[in-house]
Image 1 (cartoon, helix red, strand yellow):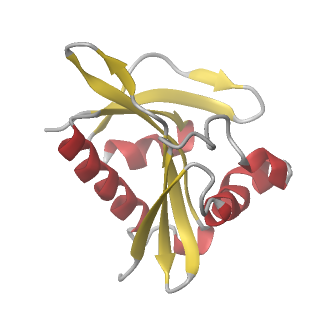
Image 2 (cartoon, rainbow, N blue to C red; image 1 turned 90 degrees about the vertical axis):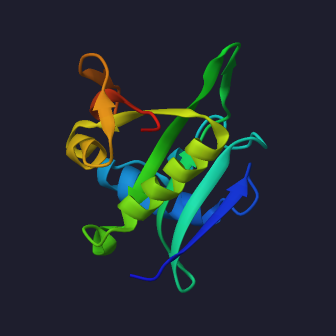
Length: 151
């Protein structure tokens, strides 16, 4: 399926990201649109990645600024990954993860995320591994910390 992946920084062009976050991650939990703005979204090193079909945003994820550690690869958090219900199961999420994996490989990053329990199999199919025990994010539900490293 032909989609276009676009990347922006900080709050520049964050509208499509918030739109997808709302439909997939917040509305089903009874949260309002205000809950789609995450801490750190405004940072100019934060990267927002959006999948578009024509002009319609259909998927998104956010990469938080790298945690820089001397002598060790930078660790970057992936968060807020979502694909609109009508587009799930069509490879959109996989294309977003492939885009991020290529970026991580080129930058020498290690990636991590807090994955909802229901999303764990999806991440595992893309070389992500569970690290640690299940935990709860208040108001959202059970999660696992997961990591991806370049093969």
